[in-house]
Image (cartoon, rainbow, N blue to C red; front, side, top):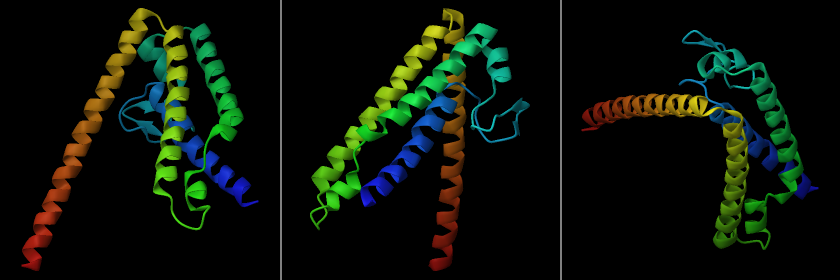
Length: 172
């Protein structure tokens, strides 16, 4: 019973991180990724940007959109089937009554490799749907996203440093 519960919890966590992040982020999108309207682009309920945005930016054909949707559905089904392949690091690490750090690390790394393999397989198939020009545009969009994330992190870092400086001045 506990193992089933932990499996379901792990599956939900993995689903949330690998599927939504992998598919939404991997599918493209602009910086931000919030629901609703962002910089004039509609976001869909899955957290990724809708096909209208991708069709516009990458000039996707209706056939490509259909292939990508089919790919996403297959990836979701494969994820559901592969849930039993994931290890349960916390459960296995404490099964003996003590915490086994080695087991926890090994099983966590195994799960990370499995998620990476699944995402790499998805992205390889996604890239095979695109033309060479669309691939380059996708790469450019990802670079923009990374630049936005870096700028955002630098801004947050500066705000945090300002807060630290303020708190230090009050403590002294």
